[in-house]
Length: 226
Image (tube, rainbow, N blue to C red):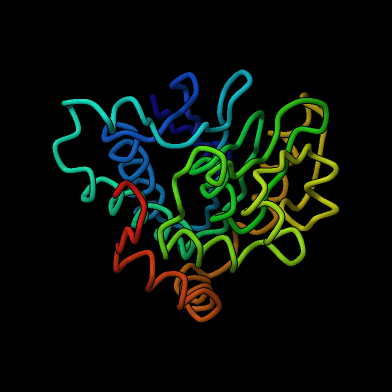
């Protein structure tokens, strides 16, 4: 489901689980990959990408609603901790959005330092208003820290779908590229930043996003999944 390779100083984390929905195995696999990147000596950076038409389609609602998920609030807290970890990760991070980034998948993209999104197909979308699942306080804080107004209000309250070029104009993603160039553009951007000092970078990110990080780490689920 999660494959980690290295191209020079850049670790490429590939999510290969179809729609790449968040369940316990997905979160555990992501954390193991982040552990490996964080432990690597020397300069490095991280790029994440999906496969086919999906970057990530968000929470695995069928799994969460089934018998396999025995602690729903605990699992949502683990998702928030993963988002918080990536938000202040002590390496430069770039999302290579090869396809749809929906709901928690969109939040995963936002937790990166930078993002490259496919131009021709695939959408960024936070559909929670339509699927009747409110954001947790931590998720709201993350989104608000990364998406500028007026796109912040629009994307959260309408479930609007943004293509790559429109997402750039709205300030949601950093860059749009063709399908063939999404990953290479992300790797190039990450490689150019790989020499940044890990400890300094981590502390800078904590200073910028401390309030969002604290909310994510506290793990309150608010009215979500009530």
